[in-house]
Amino acid sequence: MWTQAVMQAGTTDVDAVRQAMYGQKVKNLTGGMAVMNTNHHLSKPVLIGEIQADGQFDVVWQTKGVIKADAWSPYLPRTRARLRIGPSLMSAELHRAQVQSLQ
Image 1 (tube, rainbow, N blue to C red):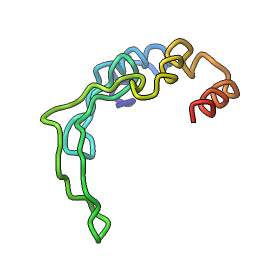
Image 2 (image 1 turned 135 degrees about the horizontal axis):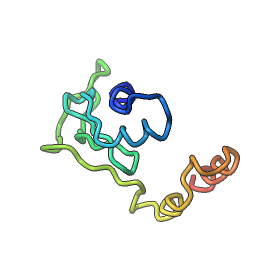
Image 3 (image 1 turned 90 degrees about the vertical axis):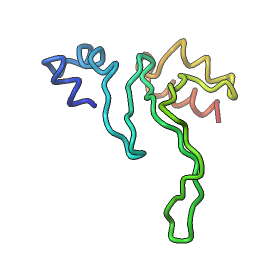
Image 4 (image 1 turned 135 degrees about the vertical axis):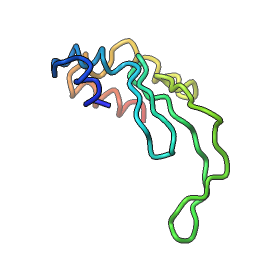
């Protein structure tokens, strides 16, 4: 995905590549396509499976198509506050402290 974005942007400049990432598609391990959204999360199929005795998975249910990922979980309301200050805009120490406070 990054390689495709660099090729599209024609540079390795971070801001240009970030913009080129939006909408990039790559095959994923589920046999479908992963799509990069403008919220920096991937849309991809959802699969639910059972672990077999040999350690492999038996898929028991899956979505018909891709699901667009949310930037925060509605089941963890405190995660929504992270949207106001994304990890790239804060120091690593502050980010670690915020992540620890959510656990």
